[in-house]
Structures are given as structure tokens and as C-alpha cells.
Length: 231
Image (cartoon, rainbow, N blue to C red; front, side, top):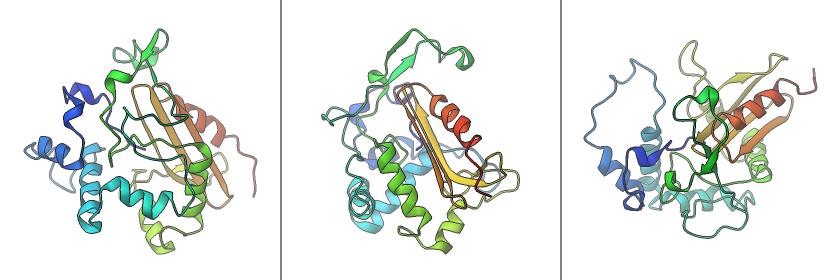
């Protein structure tokens, strides 16, 4: 799941950014990074805008829509978007490396809490909490077309540009057998996650970490390259 990395670097007071509209108001006057269709760049703000579209079309807050349409129907009881100041049983604490900002390659001890980098609550750009069991339910629902149709899923997971693995919210990757997967990774200070769905073989690789990126990606890539062959 994509997240706002280092939100305090851009928004001095996270408590002022409680709803999707707050992020839009703060960014609405920013110039385009490039003309649409001319350049690829990952955009957290783009996902904020997608969340705003869902809220407008459904007439619900983004988190309520996800709960009603995805989390509750799939039995994802340990997944949600409750604000950081609310107690959530089992929600992990994140730890960020003090060296990460200087040089990611040398990131490591000493670690400190990531509390001062957290937004008020998760957004449509990421930051939701979940478990491996709940994400497996989500992966299986996607694989079995219980959330969206096969036609829509194909559109979602097919890269839109040549030599670029990104599709519509999904990233195409490949294991040692040459089998392609779809899913997404995410991370920010003190949190890292990755989900890869290998639909043909039936595998789902899920990795969650309370350390800086790319901790979870390292683990999932190690596992995905060593999956037992089902050819």
C-alpha cells in the first residue's frame, strides 16, 4: 500500500489533515509535474484524488466505503483506517532508522519511534493497518473475482506502458519460474509492506514489517524467488 512518506516534511501539523478534502486544499494549486500522458512518476496525491472520486460517487467517507464493500464482506476484521491516536488492539509500533534519511543503503541501528512522522489517520494514498491473514483473504477475493470482474481485473493488472511494470494500482513482477504476479508494495518511516499474487500457481506472498522500506520488499522478493514450482 502506498503511503505518504515523511508527511511532516510537507505538512507541519498532521492534525490539520483529517479528511481527503484537507489534502486536496493543500495541493490544489501545485503545478503539474508533466503534461498528462507524457511522463510516468509515482504519485501519492493521485491516490488521494482517487479516494475523493470514490467519496463523491458513493456519498460516503473513503474508510466507510472500504469497510462496507471490502473489509466486512471478506471478514477482514483486523483491517481498518482508525486514527493513530485511537487504540487498536495489536497495531504495531513503527521504528525508523536514524541513518535512513542520509543514506538508505546504510540504514540500520540506532532506531527510534516513527510516531512523529505519522499522519492523523490513513488516507486513500495508504497507511491502513492489516494482518497477513486478512491480506490473504483480500488476495483470494481478487484471484476468484469476488470483488471485481475478470475483465476489470485484467485492466487493473495490465501495465499501461511498455517497459514499465505499473498498471492501475498494481505492479507486475516475475518469479524464477517466469510466472508473473500482481500486487503492490508500500512504505514510509517505520513501516513497510508488500503483496504479490501469483494467480496461476495459487501463491500469495505477503510481507509486513515495522521497519523502514524496503524491509518488507526484501523479504517478499526472497520468498517469491524460492516458491516451489507448480509447473
